[in-house]
Each structure stands twice: as C-alpha cells, then as structure tokens.
Length: 422
Length: 180
Image (tube, rainbow over the protein chains, first blue to last red):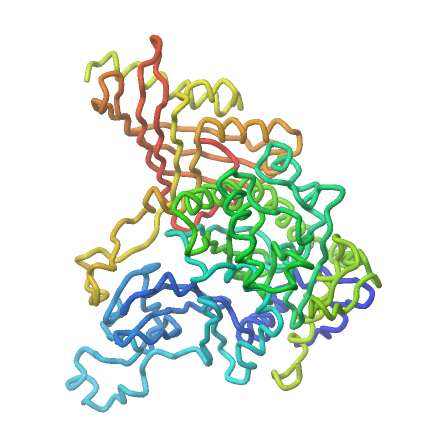
C-alpha cells in the first residue's frame, strides 16, 4: 500500500487518522491484511449440532459455508462453486448431504468433495480432476468453548495462541456454568451505514458513551445503569493481541434489570466464582471485542455479534442472543426478551448508537474534516500491566486505553507482511 | 363479516396510522388492551422441501419456516408496559435515534376481517408499508404483513394482539426506532 500505516495511527499520543474510516484503498487493504489473516468468528456449535447442519456466513466479504458433515466433522468452505464462481448455497441455514450449484449443477458433498458434474463423460471427456476441484476450505478451523473460529491464513498462530489470555475473559461470558451456553433460535441481521471499526472499538472500550448516548434507556429502566453510578468501579482491560474489554467492579451489577434474571444471577454466583476463580473477585467483564470484529455483551442483554465489513462506510451486524445452557426455561425467556428490548435493531440501547457511528463515518467524506485526527487520549499515561488481571488495565473505569490497544494492533497487522513480522 | 364491521376496522387502522405519523404515541398506546402482545419478526432464506439445490440428510433438522417462531429472536416483543416504557424513553429528550424525529408515513392495505376465537374478537389481516425519512436524505422502507386480534371493549375496538412480519432478511434500515 502506498500509504504509510504508521502515519495513520499514533497510539502513543492517542491520535487516529480519520482516513482509515472512509478511504476505499485502506479498506481494501484491511480485507487483505486483517480479514484474510485474522481468526474470525463463524457461529456457535449449538447452531449446527447434527450431521448435515449448515450455516452460511462471511469472513470479511468472502461468503463461507459452515457445515457438519455426515460423519459429524465440522468444516468451513468458501461458499463458492469452483466452476464459474457462483455462490453455492443461498440459504441462511439448514441441513444437507449435498449442495448443488444453481448455475450448471456441480454438486458437492457436505465434506466439500466435488461429487457430481453434469455431462462429465461427454463434455469433459471424463478428464476433469474432480478431486482437485472440491470446495476450498479455510486454512485453519478451531473452536473455543463452542465458539467456532476460522482463518484464511495458514501461517496465523493457532487459535489458543491468538486468543491468549482473552480465553479467561471469554469464559466470563460463555463458560460461567456447567455446559456453557447455547444460542436462542433466530438471529438479528441488519445494515449500519458506518465503518466496522466504530462498533468494534465501542464494544471494546467505550464505557464513556454509556452515560450520555444511552441515558434515555437507563432513565426509563431498561438497564441497571451500572456504569453511570457514581460509586461504580472497573477498568478498561486488554489481555493483548488487540482484544479489549469493558469491565466493571466485581460487585457491580450489569445484568438486565429483570427480577428473574437478577435472582438467577444471585443464585448462580457461587458456581460462577468457583469456575472462574479469584480473578472474578477483582474484575467483572461485561462487554468486549475479540480482534477484529467479534463482540460480546452481558450487560442489559446477553449477546454476541459479528461486525461484517461491507465497504468503508457500511457494516452488516449479525447478532445472536445466548443463554446459559443450564438456566431454567423462565430465565432463558427473560433473557430473550431483555435482548430484544435492549440490543437488537429496535433495542432501546442499540438504536441510539446508529446515528453516532453513521455520522462519525460520514463526516470523514469531507476532505478537510478527514484531515482531523480522532482524539483517543482519554487516560493517556494512566494505564498499566496488571499482573493479577494478566492484562493491560486503565487506572480509572473510563479510559480510551483499549482504543489505543485496538488501533495499535490494527496498525501492526496492516503494516506486517506476514504473521512472522507481527 | 358485515360491511359495517369492515368499515369500522378500516377507519380504526387508518386513524391508528395517523396517530403514529403525528407522533401522538400516548394516544396510540390507548388503542391496545392491557394484555396485548406486540410482536415483530423478520424473515430468513431457507430452501423449501421441494428444492433440488440440496439433498437433505436429516429431514428432522429442516425448517421451512421463513420467519422466526415466537420463542425465538424477534425485532420487537412487547407488552403494553414495555410499549409504555419505550414511549417514555422517547419523551426523555435524549432518545437520539428519534432526535430530531424521523418523518414517517404509514400505509395500510389488503385488509381482511375474519371472526376471532372469542365472541368479542375479530382477526384482521393487513399489509403495511411504512416510509421513513430521516435527517437530510435518508430513506427507509419497512414492508410486511400484520395480523391483529381486535377486541370489542366498552363500545370500541382495541388491539389485543399484533403480529408483524417484516419481509427483509437482513434488515436494510439501521434501526427500528418507530412503531408499526
């Protein structure tokens, strides 16, 4: 790329160039340097429990088909027919032994093998090397506590190494009880007219906006309003590799303000403490982002989502609501409702984020506005590596230390020729 | 169904649409019974059973339903109390998704009236198209089907149940900050 990435992100001084939110050339580079190399979230294993189950998604802008084959092994393939490049599977989800392309009828098994080519003997003279033209698998596929991830880069570090210390923080969302989590049926998918990094950084470290963007929902009892309480504690925490989390104090309650949910949380607290260990006595992670575009939240709702990039000024949100598998049905239903009402296209929290991210993106179109740096200086110099948290942490509960971590990682990956140089 | 009932229902739905477009949300809320369930979902893309695009491995795992079940994710799933809470939020002066407010126009069409399950109730099917203009040049179309249960209470109709299905899979609007 002609642009020097180091001129775009100055994490030491908390200055981020606005060009990275609008310029097509930088966006194209992100697709290559970030989305074609990082581990990206695909879906939760509870969505594809049985042989033949499949789920259609994207990694960056590449369509990907996640499928459990007849022998129960999970695969992720480019959802692209090898013949003319047509998108192979056009359904969001389902169950299949084989997939047939709608163009010329090439057929693939749920293990990716090319098993059918019309007129193979007459038109191809039987010469097509069918075993070389199966679906293209991702380079690496792995899961952590039921969360399926993949990367297109064979040289990417293995998933446990990529996640690093983030795994404990993920456990605080997805492994609080025996059996882990399951997703509620159905999904929320919608289009936001903003750059994908705005929601990613927001979920990863913007405790600051809650007290103003979301005050209407807090005032009208859609939340316990934990981060707006004067005696609240907490920190912005980054376990490294660009992964970032908003954490509140160990006894701050970020749960939805629904009696069934609050009673449930009180009841399971000893089990959660036992499973997560003493670190939970120091910090309570409630929102976060796995670099680059997988975010999760357990304040007000219980959701995780992918921010699919769709151009420099467009993002598609694919969002799930999850529950502890071991929770009683009444609690699962209460969490479903809290999620619909808090974080969804109509969510009383979520709907107020949209215009902000949209206008933060749109104003970058002005060539003069674009020259301005984004101020990312909150708490600069008031952050440290905390041995007990095994992560970088801000001294105060509001800080842009995580933004600086996120964009430092972004710049590293954008500049590095290979994983070896990251 | 008697013609006069059909006329009453039409006028009721048109008046409701006008209340929404004039942002008279507190009056709009009075159109609902206290036990209302107000529910909206979107749709998804699934292969039908007759499709030759796939050979199904496990018939028990296929769902042809193109919209979510009522115990799955919804776009809205409200009681009268949470509708009131949403309206109270709009009144705070800091509900940014509607500040400045969106400009809406609700159209109701294809109205059919059928007897309801209870003597005082009727089932009303309709289609809706809602246009939203926002900020300077933003436009959204929300198009779908509506199935209402209207109940006759104290000489007037009230909405006892509303089921809305939006026809988009990936919703093209950035949010749903209006009512339908």
